[in-house]
Amino acid sequence: MRLFSLKDIAKKTGVSITAVSNVLNRRPIRIGDEKRRLIVKTARDFNYRPNLIARSLKRKKAGAIGVVVPDMTTLHYPELIRLLEVKLFAHGYQTLICNSQDNALCEKEHLETLRSRFIDGLVIAPAENGINAPLLRRISESGTLVLCVDIYLPREKFHYVTTDGRTSARQGAAWLAGKGVSRVFYLGERQRHQALDDRLAGVKDAVSMSQKDIILCAPERGEIHERCRTALRDPLSGAGFFLESNRLLPGLLDAARELRIAIPVNLPIIGFDSPVLVINGAEDFASWRILTAPVPVIRQNVAAMAEETAKYLTVKLAKPTARFASVRLPAEIIFQESKT
Image (cartoon, rainbow, N blue to C red; front, side, top):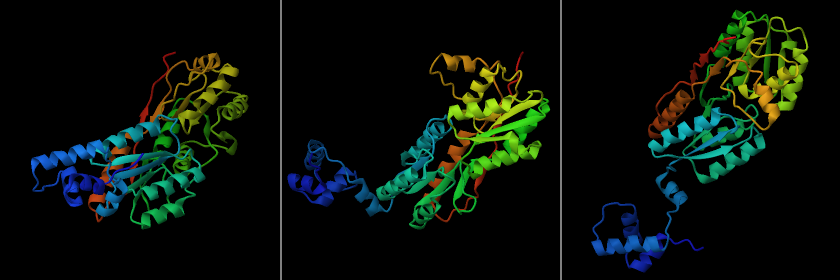
């Protein structure tokens, strides 16, 4: 399919390229109504589409923000992207969304593609603890605004918007202790980054833990099940679980179901973000029935995260000299007590 240009429209209508550009971009121009209508009709007949990259280079503004996140399967990132997209669109920016799958090589390919597309800003939750930080520095040095969201890189100078994970985790662990939990198991992911380490540090601030109480594993449900089953074979008196992310919950429920442990009646738990109900068969129903009541949730303020991110981008792009401090947002802890 042939792509028609302003030059083609100008040749067809017998006017200059500048006149065609001014008419199609609704800029003031002294031209007759008949000729104006002919230009518009010809552009429609040719199915003309402007060259956005060429326009961006000429204006030195792309009108686009790249967004790279490591996981699109949880409620956290899709909601953040949705809110961010709405806010940026209101300021005239489109969002180009990429999923790195928390893989550095995949993330690198996305970053290189976004660079070639010419973007004004980049919002990223870095994969694999920031392995691609040198590339991010080069992108920033080339003039693209770089902002870390949720996951941040403490050794880099990039602005970030994240949750105050340490304070929130400390409060959550203190709640477990207040419920009579004398042994807190920390369930987290083996692949670490600073935001997750903040959560672990917060739990350690609140309660005494041994290395055996820290269960770090791959996010696969089967491995979580095996590791939790091993931990729960010990006497249960005084035990409780802190979940680094509630996407780890299904594996814990599988282990509790196998050992016939009701949650939270026999095993108090608390975790970050609302759990996602996954039902793929009868066994999933059986595992979710282990929950005798809603569990306490440490809910990140996704709306505020999107608001602060959009504010930084739009203000800095309009006024590069504007000064901002990086943001750590408080989380909301929703305590839902068991009624049994």
